[in-house]
Length: 498
Image (cartoon, rainbow, N blue to C red; front, side, top):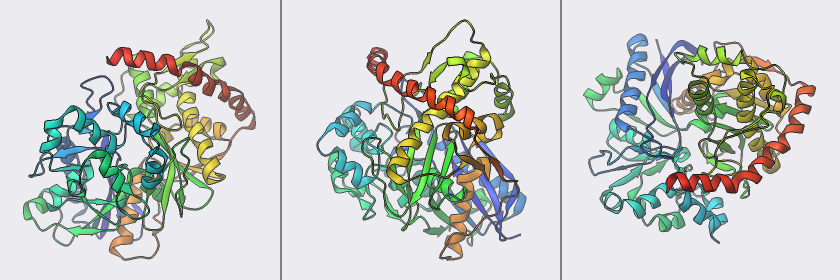
């Protein structure tokens, strides 16, 4: 059977799926999970070797079932950083997007006279998630490691090097580093000056449709491929989620809730908004994906269930079981939740925030708290959507993806909050689907992206005007609470990290 693989290297797991030559997904995706390490407060790390093994297992399981694929396209989470030596070995654990150790550095750069120009040159929000800020932090706090580093790379580059023994990075991942000039598709001169590195410390930028074949026999055997299988470097998970969700046209947005969350639109040009620092990442030579990410998506929901409700989570169905116990009325009877337990990115860009339950009274039950958590996460995304529409134009419909789409209740809250139609297509696999579409375009040298067909039914959710009105009344309180509490949040952050 002739087929392609779309693979997504996520924060919590790597997922691989198969697509046949008639552009239809084949049932039976593979999924390998791995842990996130928190050695200190506000640190977030992962072991690169474990993610490499997950990459290998995901592909090998599919190739064992279906045979050797014609091509493999790769999607990957953004903003990771791994310093490696001249043999390609990691000198420390990978620093993930969620790591906040460089928050002070980001604040200083953002407040500088050059901050706005840097943002517009790179398209990248100036924040602790940025590999630029992470490199500066290493220089200041781990000078020996910084000096001994041969290359500063992402997890995708680490895996690409293991496959081909060459350092290359796609324009999409590069545009999420704060080190890349998104207009000229070269490493940004001012960013290199800030990081005090030369371009030779970074990988060679290549197009998202760039492809290679593996010549090393033992790597071929490990993956179950041969010398004819083409590996397409692909892009970032956010950009490819838009592609996999069919959200590249005007008025269409893609919204994802996984460990974190984001809402994004496609544009022929960057949509700059320095106040909200919406991002502008490259999908390809003609298309930017513009939007904003939140830190606190599924990670908050998982934390609440495990630590507050003390429920065991054996599989994804357990999350839905909890949701079914939430209170029915929009607004959780006046209970408001700020979900900022991991700091926050768009639109407030503050790594020194904390979570808040506000308005608790004796009438509130477990069901109200469940609903408040879901509404708080959704309201954070709604605030990003508002900022995005101000800079990029009206959004008519939202294509949703991620594990949360298994919950009709959460999808309804999302639709009611935004007062927009929600469409679920390719549910959890949008980034992997997008990677397969990118691979198909590359190996067949197509002018346009193919329309991959899903083997699942498209679901459409329409908003309730009554519920939307409730959320419109609550949303100002959500925003005002943060503004009134952000100084106290900073004090608590500095006390716990000093």
